[in-house]
Image (cartoon, rainbow, N blue to C red; front, side, top):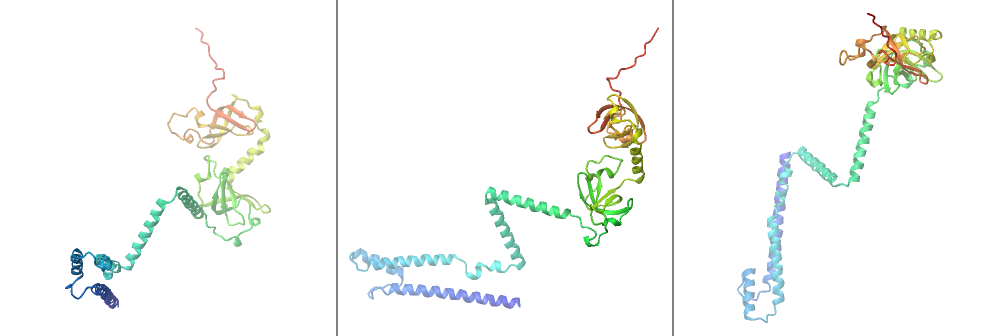
Length: 355
């Protein structure tokens, strides 16, 4: 089928070429007929060149010729025909002009057209004004940000029509959830209820200090949490990952607040004894029997610097008893900053030697 189509196309192109040549020949013949019709019978002229030379010869002998205007018109027409004919001879034949393009595969043609289109777009972008280029770059940036935002969205495991009411939950029940989003103060977890639960940053762990929840989690992670509290009327749910034992110890410490030392009774450079209750990347929290726990920075510990680059957990541990001094007491923020190095402002006991 393709071979027959190619043969028909070749025949059509050949016929078009013959018709074009015939038309050109007829036009040239008509032009020459008009030229030779003005030649006198007495003249022996067989071509336009001979006619032109005869006219020049006659003009030299007889300057008062009546046919000068006609001869000039004939010469101009003849020169125009020659220039047209030379241009047409230089041009390729119609059946040879697009022969290479027609012989290409359709897929190759599409690829060539697409590359030319992309090249034209690049050239146009190079010539575009600076304001248009800035606007185009801003649109591209916005589209990229929107695409990242859509990709970061977590698909919820259950539709909103098949969720459990908060009233059906029980406190201290363990449930599995999916992290939906991260904030500076915690993460929101989808546990299959009518609203997402908040896992506060302080309820993640007591072993280390967490600056941002992204240190531990990312959207889409599955976590095991425990129901700390909920309020069906306000549609709020609080979650925790701390063991029940740690919460009970904290509650017992809060209940013993009547027997503890008031913050106003603690002064700078007071010597205190306490127990380390939590070690973080920056230091340790120490329970000294005061109504608030004090913070001991790892650089204020005597063992700091013995091992270069050592983590605070290597020279401080939970349950260890330490002697500290209060370096700063903030009554408004209710904070105590501690140091394990004896302050230089305190007097040093000297023993006198007698001989």
